[in-house]
Length: 317
Image 1 (tube, one colour):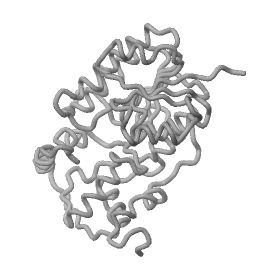
Image 2 (cartoon, rainbow, N blue to C red; image 1 turned 30 degrees about the vertical axis):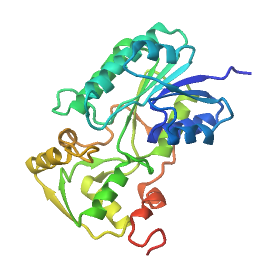
Image 3 (cartoon, one colour; image 1 turned 90 degrees about the horizontal axis):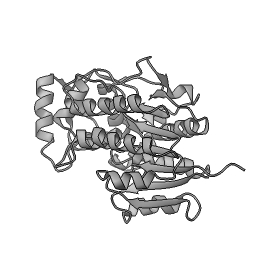
Image 4 (cartoon, rainbow, N blue to C red; image 1 turned 135 degrees about the vertical axis):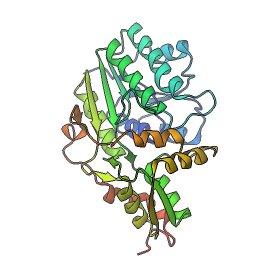
């Protein structure tokens, strides 16, 4: 009988992480989840909803503490990092969360003989030399991993859908419900959306087959422009929006205004990220389809959760 593999998971309680935890728990893996608040209702619900008693444990970890990070991954066989932010706030900068933390984590992994596989989530379209601080911080993290480790797998997803709080389909559904006219910058930028459940299946296969020293671009089968995606979402919630493409300078102004909100739906740096180019497979790496033959489509999945934005609810025609 093979020994049970132990997984240390940073970001395991989030939208993508929770889907991965559920599928790996069903495989019998012992999973430790690092969280800022182990008493959060959603985190407790995740722990209680999957796995056997004691199979999943919650640990309050300050990811800025090298000692806590090193102690957390001790005696684990696999480490997964899904920590990330979409906007900067206070001391939580892109550099601190995406680059400095990864640097400390890589250093800790090198010290630990137990970690045989490190799975790191980056982002599709990441490259150096852009105006986007988000992309720059993610790029530097990828370089750190490749330069210092041999047992890594880097995952670069396109935009992810499936019903999470930070799901882009939820964000645009909120906008479509609030604003009959949607000014849209970079409306022709292309995306290759990927379903969160397919991401979880891909990670399961990467772990089971011990696929290492590889970079995967996790993308779906279909490519859409930003404007096409907004129209799909608008139609799904029965909203009659008028989409008005706007120039980059107007988009940047839009980002500056929106980022003043406590939890901004849009920031200037996100506009700069959009300006950096299409968010589709590059043909430079393997893709999710190399792991999973059948992928779910966005039109099949989003009706399962976007119905709440419809004026007359789930069964409105």
